[in-house]
Image (cartoon, rainbow, N blue to C red):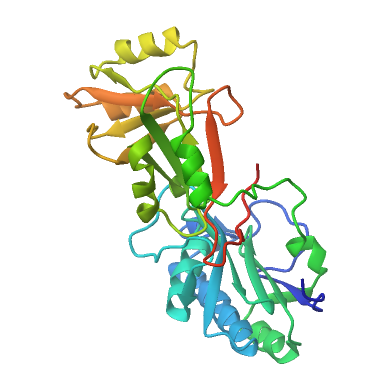
Length: 331
């Protein structure tokens, strides 16, 4: 492990970092059209601030000698907007791609990432149009230029925003030995089916489900994104029911389960020979009712498994080509 690098850390924000009452300032893309004080926020107001943040990212990147930035710890709450590049952990983005990702984060579109360049630059976003930057290069001129664009900058402590997390993480590599163990994973009953949950980003929008068999489990690996967390389950029940709420309620009651406590995973276009499952995770009956509206085909679903529950499973993280696990996934 290399020696510690001195980092200059800054908090960059639309407004001064100080207490204020809700309603005094606009702080989000969604505030466009709302009135604060006597001013109605226009799109041009927001774009001026957004462009200043994008300029700040470019300035710090240029000072660090970076023409690309690496994605770290991506999070996708719902789904990826189609105009965004993929953002799995470790993905290198061109600066034009960085602009797109930063716009999605600043506009609260349910996408969050940290950006980095080697050990010399780290960028992460906070709430209320705030950005945290740690750089190994003195950035007095950059700070002055950012301030001239209308943003506020103050120095901060590195540990406040970029300290190491103290929770335990999964260190098991999803290597050949891992997949051999998955193929031998046994459950409480004799079944050849396995279900694989891939988390390529934190959040429900960063998940994919696969169904496979023990003999063909290795075929799944070609679909997985680098540095993903993969969890294999051997005892998941797929329920096939008619598209009627009474049938779902009956199943939930039989399982002594509530959607509010154990989400339901609805499988769209269920097919026994399709390895990639197109799914929607439903957290409440209102969502389920919307899904069932107009459905005439038989539905397939299973209950979202709790890792801590008594369900046989194995979890591992896809390693880098050198065999090392570098993405951080809490246990």
